[in-house]
Length: 474
Image (cartoon, rainbow, N blue to C red; front, side, top):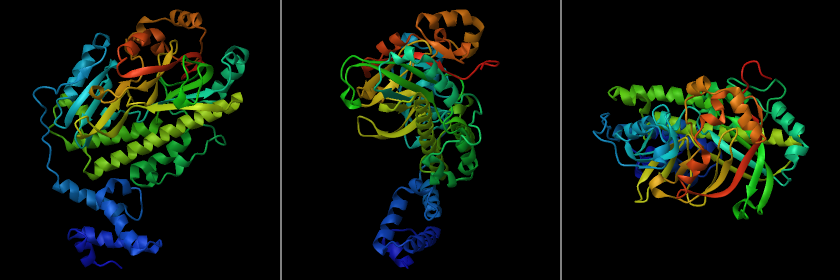
């Protein structure tokens, strides 16, 4: 037994926290840890309590440490700055002025530090899509987004891309039978996949996460609506890609875009509502930018939930690629994966620690690989980050919308869309007019506008594209 006197000698404050530390120490000792190891574990809880919220033996102590830290931290005034902080824009002529206005509103927040706007930027909720925002010790759920950790995954196969023509029907059927798309899409009973992420202890850490575990199980290995896709295509590497272990040449590849499904959506909306209640004086124009202090228990709960959603989203892609490749009789030889709609702990060029939100923006630190897709009818790019500090080590996450979904449906036609796809030899399975290539910015222009942020490793040309079905299709 470790006495209260010993805890005080180690700098633990008087009060409830010592009683909880004693209880945690007994639990750790019961698991076979020696006294020195127990004290070291408890010190780690005190130093980083948020990392222990999912540990049954340490969670109560961690929550008390967070509560005390929140009490001692200075409150932040909800008043917006009179003027936005400075930031850098890439591809300004490509960007809707309303998205610029949203970015500048975010940079008026009292917790904002700096930001950047990518060339694919367009209007979103709170922070624009393509917006990058650094904050001081605060996380903004809607600056992360509702599809937490939405990501790209590219699998490359040591197979000639000629199979896109030779085995077209087999590759098409692999997409039709081994993917599921749409709101609420799930696998049939008996075909639900297994993955270690479903046994992650974080599911048991909060009532909300417990309630989402079954949804996660049912939706694992599925994709949503909108711009989510799984597609076969041709990857061209003009030179050797040493970091991928691939020689220059042409390869068959599978590219997917999807996120954390209903899990991320529920987490985002729940914690956005909590954040709004914490800041009742925040101006209505910034209501979608309410933040959670990271020193608080609720801030650490959201961070833990966001990270769990990230692991779940990655598992989604892993399952999708495993099932589709198995149906096509293929085995991957290289993978590129990156995500957006997330927050990272990072350090600015001057050494300041910040929380970087990338809402529809891709991490592009020095040497970091990523995929920036075009549209269902246009090429995407495998890229390597250059690490541009003024962009907060970021790049665009795609081409970006040139028109809203409503405008696309009202002004575009299926014959025009289908002619565009035929000219490029693309087979579309599902997909609505709101996702027509003509609804997006020109990807080559968007890539050119950020050549100081990324270098091009290769291009991916889609050939068989699977998206959510329109009513009455398939």
